[in-house]
Length: 317
Image 1: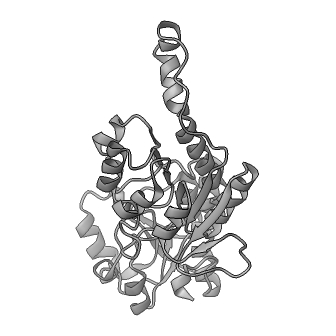
Image 2 (image 1 turned 135 degrees about the vertical axis):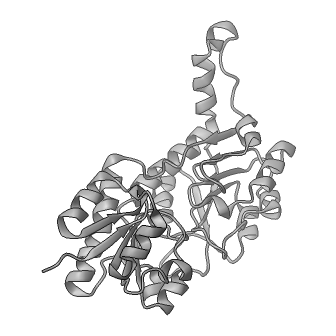
Image 3 (image 1 turned 90 degrees about the vertical axis):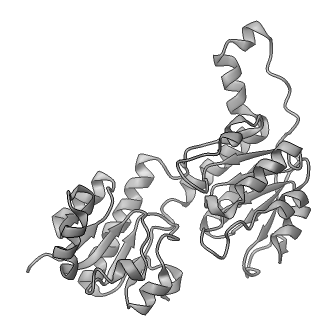
């Protein structure tokens, strides 16, 4: 049987490429000297896409009239226009669950780093200030007694909540609707939750529906002892409003693993004293990335073997 033709627009982890090449004919667009020429030649042959970012909408799909599935690497898939895919009868999959624990661990680590200024304290030591200037200043903030509001109580949000409870934090949540079987207090609006909490954990997906949901009004409600942590998508937070809130003391501090225009981080964020910044490492362990890559492969294999995807995105029903 002739192998199915798969497009790989961007480089993916070696495990993904190795396993896909064992099953399919993989066309690596990122290696093409003339990408447009390559697409014109292979477009009609492509039946599947192994995706790692990159905009995928109607214009993209029109180049591949016979594509059946986009298997996306990552739990977030805001780079894929699912409405356009549904209209074109193209399946979209992602890689949930396998990264939930890793991201939740990172979220708690980032929260601790931000509240207790651990990154800044390490820099103090490395720069010799412990010797020359004495002990690092006492941190104004503490994790003790905090109330954590989680924006997006999905798989990752629940994993974060479980860990946060072990630290003695009180949990609240906000999302599109109240969830059955969840005992945490629910808030119908993000502003109301921010007002009831002093720590806001953003786990929400990106896209037009959540763009700049964390705005000046929400940050004001969070208050002067407030800590913002974002491990969801950078677009959910209005970065300029966040910078203004930090400069004015509207909130106490912030810890960010994601940004609006990655890998570009506003210089002002890097200059502010009580801000902890990570380069989008939430799920970035070898073990977790391998598990995510395997799921990309499994979705493609299952689709072409059985006509069923392993982990379709919710919009696919």
